[in-house]
Every structure is written in structure tokens, then in C-alpha cells.
Image 1 (cartoon, rainbow, N blue to C red):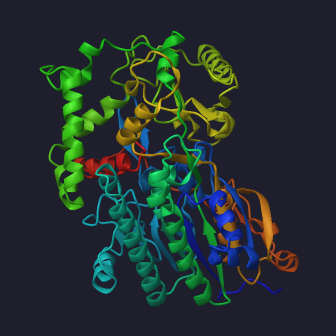
Image 2: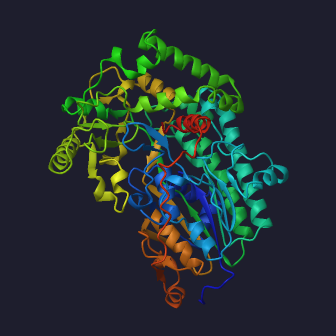
Length: 581
């Protein structure tokens, strides 16, 4: 069917958090004609994300075609060297050449809109609008820098993040949905305007609304969700579908408008599913194993930070109450100004929040708890490390993994951990050393790792009651969490029709896009060209070509800070609102 030519283009539409678990049933019911067309006129399949699929590490694996051990992004936060403090990640944290840098260097025109972990924007051969890691619309988050003015003047006021948390905590669900709809609209208008005005060989736009609506509205739809309520279902049970339908309408318009030279790819970084009421408190489990020791609550760094003049419970409860009232009532821009008032104090408290309750001098292993990972308190790496590298380190990891895999559900007796991974089992490359020491996969996603401070009980395995779960959801936001399987759909003149593909990885996208644009694929990528997606004669006439050239940038993210203190406060509030902190 011919050869790749200079006219060939690729358009990628990213749908953060989209899942075939919802799309396929709605397609079968005739409710999503755009997705149906993609499936009938092209190929589709479940796209396996990284293990513990957070957006930063997943999109970074897309961007580079590499696993996190090579691109060095493992979550929204990372540990500061030789410290227990944390910092937020962004594009400067990522190692290796991006897809758009490779294409720009080859003379291809690129347009990138709202892809996570792209701030600060790269100086590409084209244009870029950074994503959720951008501090705000007043920051330098576009390339060229004046692009944001052009968008605001010709499209409308651009929105980086819908910020639905403020509406949700105030019980203003309809306003949250309206804001999501408004964000989809301005994102698509921006996509359409830029796609028509500027030349491009690759154009990629990410819509985040599916992720946001699922995190906050899953409980209204899912009859098996522990927080499901029949009355609430009548009012908000269709909220997630309405967002998908909105995106499907956009997809239909794009399909109708693209020319025969354009291959269209729809992709998500991960899937989604409802949370359960089954909880594990990892640090409490480590305490029970004799591997972690908490500080005396009345003598923590956190309390000393606020001078110890107020009892902990009164202080925390008052802080929560004030924060809730403010977030219910204030406009988003006002809130962003508010969180900038005491940035130094807030950033210090953010770091303390993770580990300040732990007596590190006597602790051998500890968890961040909102993530299903465990760190070994390693001598030479951690300031108060007490576990020696080598044999002691390996024996301790073996012990912890064996203990995790022996845990059983208190009601069913079933194992709760599918597997505890040593980091080198799932990551490979130069930056494995920067990853957590143990990564946990819960069996059938039935358990949720929750912070120890949220439970007064000493039990580390609990099945939470309804009222307590409601309070947890109110404070921690999300009632749905990520699943590993995302989506992949592709159509174009060289693509097979009506075929479902298997064994796809998010790392396969960049090699496949490079191939479609007639480029060499760097052989240090971990992904592959999805050859089975193409018609046999096309693929045989266009063999994959590899190169050893790309070595990637080795910028040390520990040198200087990309985010100011003020920026950090905005990013922190945004990630809390998304349920990630």
C-alpha cells in the first residue's frame, strides 16, 4: 500500500484516564459513535501503562519511549538528594530526548498542547503549551512565550486545570461539571485554531476531563461502589458518560476533518476504577513488623513548627475547617493568590507531612502511604539510614516482600498483594537508583493504601465503615483510582480495519509515531513499533530503521529550582485537589 512520504502526518489525542471498561459497553449500546468509528475503521486495544500508573511516569514513558528507570520520573514528587524532603517534578526532571525534540531535530514541525510533565516548555520546531505541571496562566508555560496572548485574543481565556476540587468540597457538583465542560471546550478550540493556523507533522493534544470526572463522580455511577447512593445516582449517575460523550463529539468532528495523509491516534496514560473500603496502612504494618517507629505525637517536628501552643487535634481540625470554608467560597484566582502568602512555611510543612511522624533514627523501612511503595532507610543515601547496602538491604527487602505477599483479607482470607516488586524487577536503566525500593501491586485492585494518620485504630488492615469512608473521601477527594490498562485506537490509510490488538505498552507510542513519520527509531527505547497494526504490504515496504544517535540530555535537576516557592504552593494545591497528595 505504498511508502511513507513527506506529506504523512500524525495527530494524537490524549484522553487522560480513559478506559475501555466504560468505552466498550457504551460503544455496544450505540452511545459513542466516534469511538465506534475508530474501532471499525482502525485498530484498538488495551494499552498497558507502567506499574503503579501515575500520570507523570506514564506520560513520561509515552514521551520518551522508555521505562521510568531511564527517564527518571516515578511520580508527581521526588526525593531531594540526601534528604527526606520532597520536591515536585516537571519536564526538567525527565531524562532522555522527548518525541518532539527528536522530530524537531529532524526538521519536522510539531505542536504540543497540555501534555503533563512538559513545563517548562521546550523550544521546539513549532509550538508547545505545557500541562498540569505549569504553575499558572501567568507563568511562561507556552513556546513561543507570546503564544498564550494569541490564544486568549483569538480563542478565549485558556484554562490549564479545571480545578474541580473547590466545587466538589463545597457540594457544587453541577458547577464542577460545567467547569469541566468549559475546559474541554477551550482546549478543543485551542487545538482547532492552532491546527489550522500553523503547519505541523505531529500535533498532540491531551484532554484531562475524563480523569477528573472519574476521580470525583465514579461513586455516583457504580452500584458496587461502597459510597453509591441511589438518590445521588439519579442526579449525577450520568456525569462520567456526559464527559465521554462530549469527547466523542470532538472525536467525530476530528475524524470528519482530517485528510487521508493523517494518521489519528487516541491514547490514555492509564485507566480508572472505583476505590474500595478495604484499606491498608503501610506504615502501621511496618511498625507491627518492628521495622518502623513513630515519634511521640506530642513531640513531633510538625507540632514544634507551630510552636506547640495548641493541641494537635484542635490545630488540625481548625486548619481543616478554615481551609474547607475558604475553598468552598473563594474564586480560583483568589485561592491561588492565597496559597502564595506563606510559601516557605507551606513547603516546609509539605515535606514534614510525609515523614515527620517517623523516628527515622530507629526505622529500617517506611512508606509514603498515599503511594503503594516502600523505601528502605539506607545508609549512605538517607540522612539517618541504618540499613547497610548489600546483604542486609537485600535480606530486608526479601523479608518485607514475603510479609506483604502473605497478608490476607480479614473477611475472605484471600491474599491482598498480587506481587511486591523489587525496583530492578520492573525498572531498568541508569536511574533505577532514584526509584522506591519496593513497589506493590494489589490483587484485583481491591485494596487502597491510605495514610496512617487517617485512622485512629492500630490495625493495619481494615474494612472501613460508610461514615468513616465518607469523611476520608471528603478530605482525600478521590473516590476512584488509576488502573493499569489505558486505551489505544489508531486509524489511517496504512492501518488495518476492525482489528483488536494485544500486548501493547505505553512505551510503544513514540517508536510507532517516529516510524509513521519516516524517522529512525533510537535503539535505546524500550518500546517497539506496533507493526501488527499496519497492513502487511505497507509494513514490509517500510521496514523499521534504527539509530544509535539519541543519548538524551543529562541535565541535573538538583541544580537550581524550576519552581519558585509561590509556584510550589499552586502545584501543591492542584495535586491535592486531584487526590494525588
